[in-house]
Image (cartoon, rainbow, N blue to C red; front, side, top):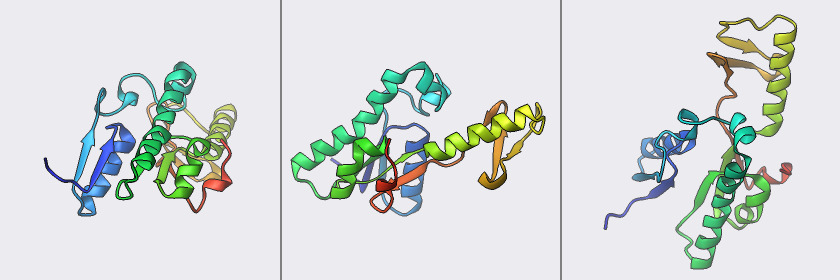
Length: 167
């Protein structure tokens, strides 16, 4: 058996980035994926479209992080930390206890603001086919790839900010 510093469960976009940053930081890392290397986006759909197409599956995925946290908590292991793509309300207690250091998700407030800004730009003609970026005013400038306006990096929810979110 080989010891590693970190095990990342899930080889989707977040898992791949996490594993890369961990390795860049000098720790040994193993990336584990049971189904789709590269994540669901490459195969089915991304947030927010997958929340419309497969809400039951998305909720099940979000529940896996606190499930893993409960298993770690019950084991008494303090050297294992859980992270993943989940919802603040599902993980708040585990984050406050330190079983989960952080979770990631696109901030729904930012996502909502970007959706409104995109719709406004389309309605007013400021966003034309073939555009490569969207100026969303006070929300910043966002990359456009094909017909997707990219929100950018997911938001990191941790002990310092988890109480600001109620979803």
